Amino acid sequence: MSTARVPPRWFVRSAWVVHRFLYRGTGGRLGLWQPRKGWGALRLTTVGRRTGEPRSVILGYLEDGSDLVTLAMNGWGPAEPAWWLNLQANPDATVEMVGLRRPVRGHAATGEERERLWARWREVDTKLDAYAALRPSETAVVVLTPR
Image (cartoon, rainbow, N blue to C red; front, side, top):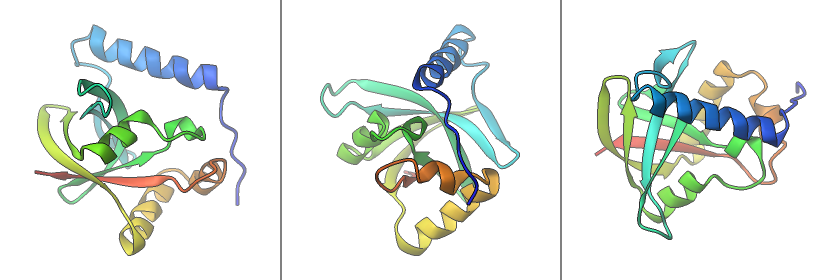
């Protein structure tokens, strides 16, 4: 297994802030992209489990037929990402991709589906298993199905 070195948390958080600023500052023209080299970037909007307010985050994704697949990794930190906790509480959400907005329903892949989709992510990132080993719990493979 290859080794994984995660940048300091301050760097990861700063990169997220810059990415969101780029998206918002350009009115959504920059910051999302269609899959290239296997993966793309989308904007997921969930309903806050505590506030009931819309909460948005930009995530990497793979296409799997009509489904979109992402990882609940929180920058490979130990905590579950808030968007994943929100999606577990209310699986209905909306995704925005380049030129497209659609409602989705999220669920965690399990069993054979998870293994297959994890292998697809491993093709994109050869250090995926090493990064995942840094987390105290299994990283959820999240499937966003059109509704």
